[in-house]
Image (cartoon, rainbow, N blue to C red; front, side):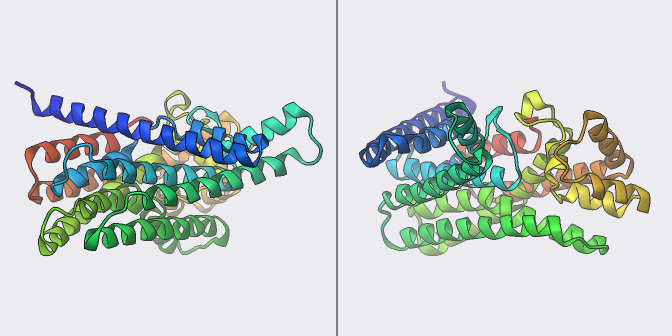
Length: 369
């Protein structure tokens, strides 16, 4: 007899393979479009395809289990397309985020804008290779964003569920871009009101990451399933949100910890990359709040310096630990897990879906990459 775990793994494997197949077909169709314009445009596709292949597929999986929890049938083409649209949007966000953060790598390989910069250098082209790299990256990110819209529009969802899933998809993209701006703003405004800085960091987590990483994909899948009566569907989507928003916040807090303390061989990023990028995370805000003026000055002088040595990074890590900030963030993550588990237990879901979501929670909050 097949266990729930085996059934979950089987469904996920089938869905993820269908997702990869859908993306592969889409990319081939876009290769024809770009090739008809000019073969010189195809590196845009190649860079997007490389980034969009693999990864955790967290958002697509949440969309799938949101769909299944709302009564959607396994491996329906609509939920596959929805997952693919979310993953294409994720790729667009990553491409632009790496440009904004001046990140040289992504998943252990050159970031998209660095690929174009390297191509410029290898070909011995004229002009500023850094500018060409950023320009190529911006255009690739914009193209990927356009493709996410094309993929979602191809679902052809009907009736109220279609309108609601469209509303969620559009809101998700707007919130991420607003959250990205708030993140950049937080790096430059400065403030000696450390409670305000902490509040700002929490707001960035919510809108730049938590909602689009967990809340909206799960809610979108539920809305798309359209199998329940409107009142029941609304209650279910509301319960999805109550579960997935804190899950997304915990996911980003774990990401912030890994951005400072993660091992490069696990994260695919250089040691202390968030420090070099100058990210004003909750971890940094808590450190600022609980250190001496001298330590605070050192932290602020160091953040955003691309040439930080391993010794510099280790000194900042020690400061973060000594301030109690790391322990406080780990405490918040643990509290988040308690909240998430309680919300999941209260949801009226079949055991298969509930166990699948439990497994995702464990991976999100206790991962090393």
